[in-house]
Image 1 (cartoon, helix red, strand yellow):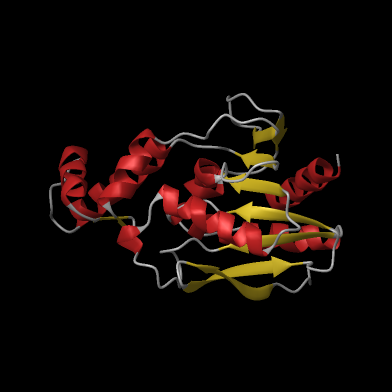
Image 2: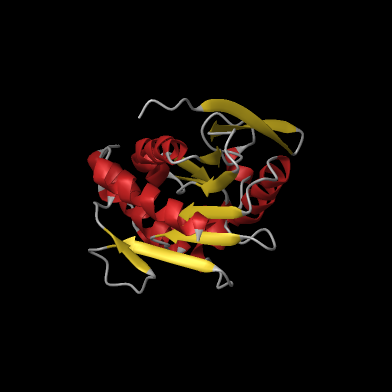
Length: 236
C-alpha cells in the first residue's frame, strides 16, 4: 500500500480543521466519518490502510478530523454531536464530489447530516455504550491511583462541567447527548458487522474488533475486507 495521503483542511467556525485525502483524482469518492474518542486511536491505522486500498481500486476518500479532536484548536469541552454534524456538513460542502458516506462505530451517531446521500455503517454503536466503556477505563485508572470512583460519581461530575474520560475532555452537553444517542434510522443505509457479532447486518466481515484492543494496532484482513465492501457498495 504505497498510495499517498494528502493533508488538507476545511473551514468550520472560523477555523481550519484537518482532513486527509486519498485519490483526489478519482471520479468516485467516499466521505469517511471516524470512530469517536479512544476508539479512533485504536482504529486509525486501519482507517488509513482502507484509504490507501480504496485508492488502489480507483476510489478516492476524505477523512475529516472533528472539532475538538486531535490537533483541532476548537475547545474540546465545547464539542457536541450537533457541532460535529455541522462540521461534517461544512467539510462535505467543500468536497462536493462525495455523495457516499461511510461511518465507523461511534461515527454512525453523526452520519445523518446531509440529504440525498448513501450511508455505509460499520459496527454502529450507541452513545451510552461508548460512555460506559470510557467510564470503566476512568474507574480503573483512578483505582490504580488509589482513588475510589464509580459511574454515578462520574455522571454527577459531568452534569456540572467537563469530565475527563479515557483522555478525552467531554463537556456536559456532549455527555448528555451521548447518554441518549443512537444511530438514526434513515433510508439508503448499508450496515456491516464483524462475523463474530450477533447483531443484524446487511453483510458480515471477517476480522478483529480493533476497538477492544488495549493498544492501537492493525488488522490487514479487516482493512482489506472493509475496502472490498466499500468498493462494491459505492459501485452498486
